[in-house]
Image 1 (cartoon, rainbow, N blue to C red):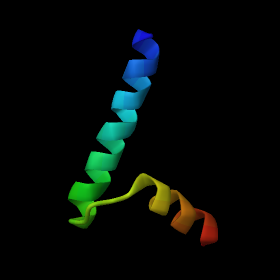
Image 2: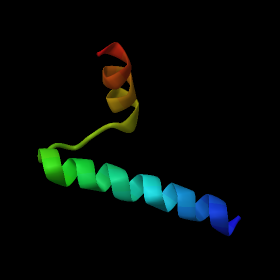
Image 3: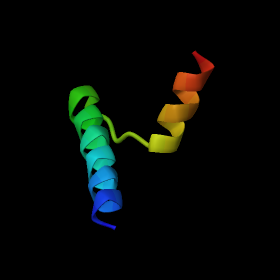
Length: 38
């Protein structure tokens, strides 16, 4: 279970990094949809 927690934590870190870089509150689902549409 630790590996699953670590993976989830890594995702949260990436999302937080995107929020800081863009200055926006990023919704992971919307981000995925936007990326798929490009």
